Structures are given as C-alpha cells and as structure tokens.
Length: 196
Image 1 (spheres, rainbow, N blue to C red):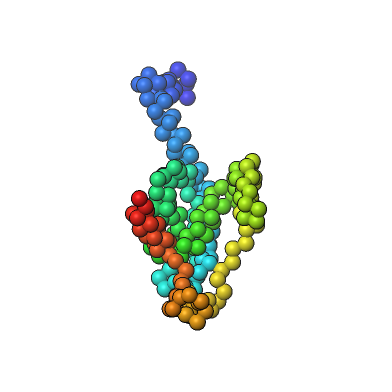
Image 2 (cartoon, rainbow, N blue to C red):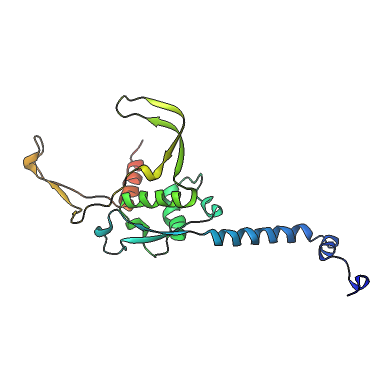
C-alpha cells in the first residue's frame, strides 16, 4: 500500500476533534477493569459455627473485590451495615442473609476478606497489654495467619444454661447463646438510645 494513500493517524483525528484524552481515559479504565477481573481470586471459607446454621451453608465462597468497591466502606459511619448490605454480598457467591451469621463468623469473614484482598500482614500502631495495662505505640506488623481460629467442636450446642444452684445471690437460671451479628447490632442500637 502506498504511504501517500494513508491518511493521518487515528490519534491525530481524535486530537483534532478534542476526543483523545477522553478516549485514552476510557481505554485505561477498560484495561484496569479487565486486569482486575483476571486477578479475581476466590477461596472456600469454612464457617467457625458451621453446624449451628439451618439456612447458611457450612462453607462460603469468598471472592476478592476491587479496591473501588472497598472505598464504599472506608470511613463509613456505619461500617457494619455497609459490610453486611453492600460489601459481603459482592464478595460472597452464596446468597445468604448476612445478618443471620453468628457474630464470630461475621468477624471471621471480614478477616478472611482482608487477607484475600491485601495479604495476611496487618500493620497497627497501638498494642495493648492486658497483663500490665500498658499501651505501646509504634509500628507493629501482625501476620493474621498466625492467629489461630478453629471451628467450634462437633456436637457443640449453642445454648448453655447456668442453673440457679450455681449462683450465690441469684435465684434463677440463665441461658446463654452465641449472638448473631443482628443481635449484636440491635443491642448496640438499643444501648445508644438510652445514653443521655
């Protein structure tokens, strides 16, 4: 083909029309979106209270989520609501009511999602010692994989009763259960209503 028959470059045309910067931006966004899709990682997560649920599977498939989605909850006034209603439904393949999760499994999912998206290393600037009551300030890195989290033992019943015979100054039985995240958030809300 003769070079004289070839017109100007397409980029020159876009620049003349004032569209070059806009089309470059769109192209870059598409490349980044494609790269994120290819990078998506998923992992099966076994719930710690797996045998205590009737309506939630014992394993959930957790997918990494793009940083843009995470920005929705960074600095959110209601972190837990955004996690339960926006972030976790994007990150978990199974369709469940996240408010029905035991509070410990909600925290477990948040931890696993953090590891999946950013890796196991977490940096904190404060460490509190419960033995001596001192707080240390600095930069401390924790490997979240080294913190042992084990599922509840098979046969664990989510109802523990302390009978009145075990109390000195109380005449009644008390039944304890592991709370769901819904129960925790409702208790926090009720507590905040009675603060004066």
